[in-house]
Image (cartoon, rainbow, N blue to C red; front, side, top):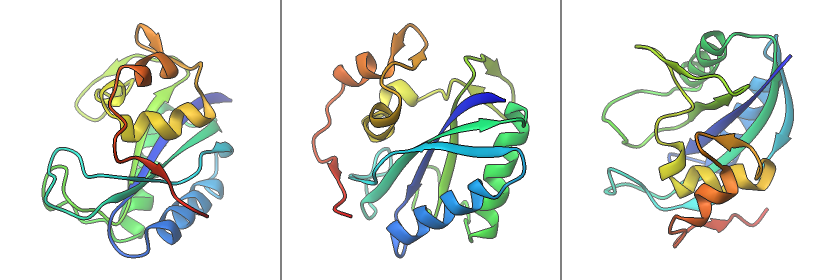
Length: 159
């Protein structure tokens, strides 16, 4: 089993229900065991800011899947849940990103690990820091990377 971390996000429809469904689908995927789940965080849009706010969360998983197979499992769940890729950084019913996989470094046409923007995005690091503050990504821990970022507008979603 390898430890991996996933980032989840939604900004269409019932965001909390969507994240819960994505977690449930991941949890029943062969080769994936969910070991940690952050709270949901309400976050402002990033990149393309002309859209609704997001709800983001992070998951810790143990997996027997390869990094690429884990990515494909997430993409299959996105598709099954109605994800349509219309514009870069645009609205999405669900987004499941592989953030880190057992310290692996990968850069190919399908997958970049650690995720290329993980240390620049507070909306990813805030929930990830809740479940894995000491996880090393690149030259620093999640907590160290988060300390350098502006977290304005990110708030824990009341359960």
